[in-house]
Every structure is written in structure tokens, then in C-alpha cells.
Image (cartoon, rainbow, N blue to C red; front, top):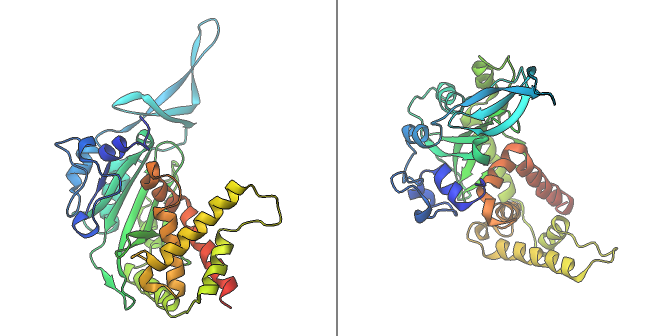
Length: 338
């Protein structure tokens, strides 16, 4: 079964604090294990994550080479990584030096040590790609109220993989409560992040991670300052249209098919609608903050297909694609708002 299906998302991801943020878009009561709901009014219990998601281990398996005449030998330079509860699920083949980062150890125990809190307030958790990837977000206690009407709740994103696609990553990010968008960067500032490769030297690097992450209050202060700066910068309707045309351009110098031109124009119109009418954006229409919010909301809630939106948004943040989109809109504003 694909990780992008609704059934997978309802059985293999968990969403907390729904009293404040509501249900995830993929919520379907009939697709969940009835005795194991995946939505929680407050924090997700650590015991539920261990019971339902991290109740298996990644195991090393030998790579056996068989010749045409039936002789077999083990390739000592390589190993496969499989699921303990389903060894037919092979996550990948790696060099012998590849070190497994077990999800329970690196996404729960290490994080508890990192934030000096054994009673973790888990906001979200999940498995993706048949368990080849996993993530946990830990809510940090204070909600920062900004003068612009945003409530910022810093949290720590921890993620890793068994399929070779992700280093173990710890990153401070912020949920903007008014629209529930996760910013990969503090509006252009790189968020505190540290990555640990799956190498034989990765064990014992927790203090290095702790040193690499800056203080949460400093991060919140920097983000608040950026929000204030953007909210104070006025944007006219003509300037907004120029920014939209830079973000979603129509190449008039080429023979563009009518269908392609229509798709681009529809995206431009959707951006204008979000900017003026979407409740997550409209309060800041007429400012650079409103422009940023319009593009961010478009990318998180409208762009692409809904079938794998949760997974895509998470991976885009971890792999740097969300940061690329943040940089794109900031660059467009810089070019127009001179």
C-alpha cells in the first residue's frame, strides 16, 4: 500500500492539538483503526506513538550473491535494511558502514534528552513510504503573541529514514497558529537545524546537536522582528500584480499553447483571490507580509494534488524545497518593492 493513500495516513500518522488547530485534511474516521484513533485533542501520548508507529525495528540483512551454478557467498561490503515485522519490506542496500538510527531512539529518547523533558508534548508523528521515513514534532511550551495578530508556537521537528533519503535532522520551526503554516525559514532567515549522517561516527553526537540549535526565545524574537518588518512594508495592487507575474509567469515570447496559458492565468487568479479573500491572508493584504502569506498558503494548501499533501509538505520542509519557495517570493518582492 502506498504511503500517499488516505488509509495509510489515517493508520500511520498522528495529529495532536486538534482542539486548537482542527483536524488534518486527511481525517477519515472510517479508515482508522477504531481502537487506535490518530487525532488527539491535546498532545499525543508517547505510549501511543510507541504502540502504533514505532513498534518495530529496522534490521540489517546480509546480501547474498548466488552464481549460475548455485554457489552462494555473502557480500561483506554491503547490507540491506529491512523491517523486523515484515522482512520482505526492503528499505535499501547500503555500504557496511551505514548505521541504523532507530526511530524510538533518535526521534523520542534523543529528543527528550535534547529538550531536557522526558514528558514530551508531541504535536504530530508519522511513518511514510512503508516506514522508510519517520517524523515527530515536539511542541515547546510558550506561544509567542505578536503585535501583527500572529501567534507563533515554536516546535522541534525531528525526522530520519531507513531508506537512505534523509539524514537524522533536528530543526526548530514555527507553527503560525492563525493559518497553521509551517515555515521552513524565519521569512528568509535559516532556522536552527542540525543533521546527523547515518555513519559509524553518528553515535554520541547529541551534545553537538544541542550546541547547534540556538535558544528558542532568540529564534522567536528574530521571527517576530521579520514579521513586523514585512507587515510595515506597504504593497500596492499594481505591485502585487507584478509580483504574481514574477512568481507565475506567462512566457509571451514563445508559442504557448492555450491550455498552458489558461493554467498559468488560473494560478494567477487563485493567488489574487487568496490575497484578498482567504482568512489566513486577507488581514495583511496590502503589505509584504500579506504577499508572503498568500504565496505560502498557496504552496501549502492549494499547489499539487491533495492525495499526498501532508507527506509532501513535510518532505519539502526537510529537503529544503519550502525554503526555496520562501526565497522565491522574497526575491520577487525585493525586485518589485524598490
